[in-house]
Amino acid sequence: LWEKVFNSIDKSTVEDATTTNYGDFLANALDKIKDQFKDDELKSLKEDVEEIKKLEDELQPLVDSWRASNPNITAFWWNVDNAVKTTIKMNIPTEVNGIKFLCRSGMFFINLPSGRTLSYVKPRIGENRFGGESVTYEGVGSTKKWERIESYGPKFVENIVQAVSRDLLCFAMRNLSHCFICGHVHDELIIECSQDVDYKSICNVMSRSPDWMPDILIRGDGYETNFYKKD
Image (cartoon, rainbow, N blue to C red; front, side):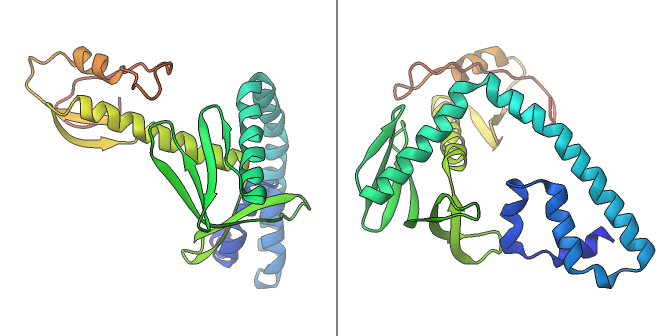
């Protein structure tokens, strides 16, 4: 039954599921195709929706508590949000905690500490569904088509964190270029070596901080195995 509901959802509205109560999102999707179900099927689906709404309501205090316990992170979200909007609206460079933002030739750029750049096509300031300011840019969206994508501070921070994490992994890979790196998965390196190699020495190399981010605290960890597995 739920497969029919999911298949009916307009892919361009998928982002709404991350900013509203998921139960309300599903209830709206179900309401649009309710005539396709028998009475008992619809009743069962609605009961599922109510359970999901209750779970969402129970989770919100946990979200609020986490945000209250991490004020520096939430402040960074909205400092980035303000910097991005200022750069796009006024076409002036801004900076937050060493992360630089600028617009040039119809593109929006985020300059990372490593010197690498994230690029966003044709940025604009618009209005989101809540009536507030929204940043949009062109790219491949959830529909797998070229379209305008909406973003805001926390999402840009997610992009920055993932990009910096990638740069840190690449820094470790360069330092371990003398090893046979046969693969990498997210933040892991897979290295084939002789059994007399001490993996702790490899972990020490992975714990080094790059010159472009000398104060970051990194701790490498690892394990030995005859075949790849999750530790």
